[in-house]
Image (cartoon, rainbow, N blue to C red; front, side, top):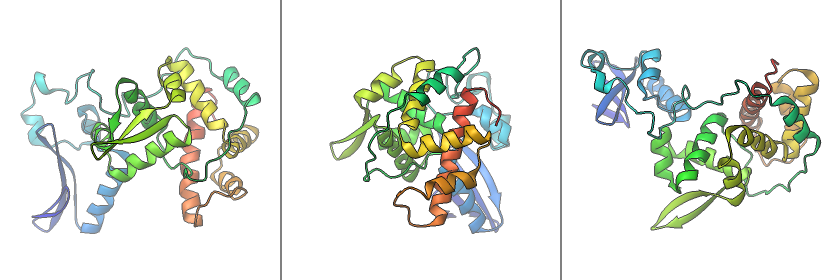
Length: 269
């Protein structure tokens, strides 16, 4: 019996199942509906892991699928298909020396004027954001396109595209009653460049916001990414966030961005 999207009830248990490319995948069995809804919300937020290598690591794929697998279906997606997979779409910093270039950007940064219409960012996974930006190099994408290639819901699409507006690298327009996203001129320069310069320019996009510049310097000075310090710095700015709970959630996003930059710099803090 279908209770909610992707949640069914069988023998007093709540099952999460979803079909991709004609194959049904099992994402967990729960004793209560609340537990199932919580798991589904987590999957909506973090992405539904549908590549086989992730499913096998997480023991999420049905055993019946494994029994019937063949060499032809050992990967759900080919290397050329555009689907976000956090194990495959990650920044490769091997043999790249970012530290001095990032510090040079920091030293010469010019702050941009904040647009109060653009909300403070809340997209934790910068690699997913990069994946969306790289996808926009090839063609403009609708919200549905982004949902499908990232296995995320409307709310999460809005979070990541809003980050693109915050960095002034995405634009949107309406066509045939659908919203489409495209790269701005600034976005094209960033995402059409090689990986090294793309990552440097994304660091610049972050530092151009004075609040993020202050947070990064605090982390650099203290050699620690402290969420309490991030929250305290955020409270010094008028961010139009209506509660401490919301501020702490946004601080989690900024913490993940700081970790991303320090990984580029190969600094263990």
